[in-house]
Length: 455
Image (cartoon, rainbow, N blue to C red; front, side):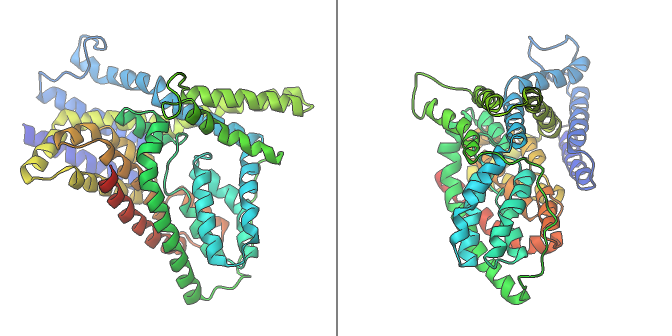
């Protein structure tokens, strides 16, 4: 029976990956796969208990469906609410032009550089830093296409090289405002700020340096081989974000500043939650807009974008996390995770080997589907149990899995950010991926190595 359930789990996982590659909605695929595994496990394991005494309906059959409410409730009062508030805040910052102001502010200084490849390297670091406060890969890419690309082109950077950099700036999803960071921090029992400082930075910094250096040589090699001219590109990208005062850029950084100042890293007396930080700065921005604008009605209507953004994040991210968590519970109910742990112990595999295995699994599925949130969400919740089983820390598995979800996305020809950048630079996605693949592969190697050393 145990062998049969494990086979079912493997088949369900394979089919889920197949359907996601075929373009089916990941949330629906993972939800149905999870419910299927839970149902099979409930039938074959009479003593299986899905919910605790407080949550159970009293019937194990109804508990299968009650699990959706249990998981959704925990997400909507925890990680899901944080992600939704981050999405709402980002949407409002776009609405009032603050995101545009920030990109413009950091883009102007680099326009003085003359060497195109040094300019590319600096642009990568700036873009990666921007991704921490504008945590939308496609959204940031579009802003950079409008505001940064003309600067790069004026410095004689080819469209393909510029596109490769812009597609790479979201390769490392880090910072307390990023959805997968919030999920990862909750999984290992840390606040997003503490997780960012103590686990992400030590891995991300050397990885960023390696990616930047690799970009320098890869883009120069392809430019020389393809001998691209500076007149092969004409932008058709436009931004619908309004212009705003330059100092509006500060608004985007305020939540992170507040979270760092009022956190255990600085003070033990006051600890500000992520949701509160976003809400506080949003309210401050609305007040500033009311003072600055003469149209009070429009200003207050624009303020509603915060809640619209929250709804969009529920649709695109939180619903996926809920479905992925149910899928993870399905895998656990079949005994597959226990079997993996037992097998690792029998073979003498430690935390390092398990981290590499699951990092590659998440990366492979991300590459095939073009989305990193689904694969990471599906396996993140399993990390603490796996780490405990092989005598390691959950951060050693969670961190490389999370970064792999971004690195492999930047070299997937079907990912949203690659398609958007390819369209904005008038090249094919495959041509773009050809230029991002080597830097991303080097990034995966350095990232995994640093995770094994430092975590």
